[in-house]
Length: 195
Figure (cartoon, rainbow, N blue to C red):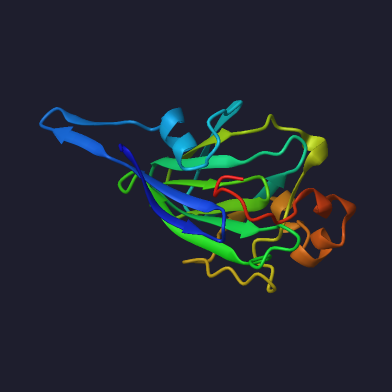
């Protein structure tokens, strides 16, 4: 199987690593295989692809969208970033818990998290490029964020961010999100890893 599961965390965050074929010409790898993603319970249909470029020290997130639900399969194609997912599912044994991993162009990790996880990353090198395969089309009326430094979550970022957008600095806390009516869009149900 060219795509291998490296880890499954928080009952829904999946780290995938492709098999790389390398010789004197360079390398080749399969980035996306619907059949293999389907075999492990991950989505096989993505309707939007995004790419971001970030300077060293930029923090983006923690973002999520509930209508339509936007799960993301993210990979770093240039540089190195610390990627994070936070569980937003009401009733989840890991509600408010976070998972983080270093993803880079060198280690070729892809990180999947469903719409019920807030996502973000910190650029650890200059010129970080991140590609996102998304299961939902962007809707500014049904998206939000959680503060990157919410003490109730306690993410251990590997270094302090140097640049954060005003929108992300003003994001709500996890407690504020849980008290909102929209929080009911994300409920825990023990299912396949991709749900």
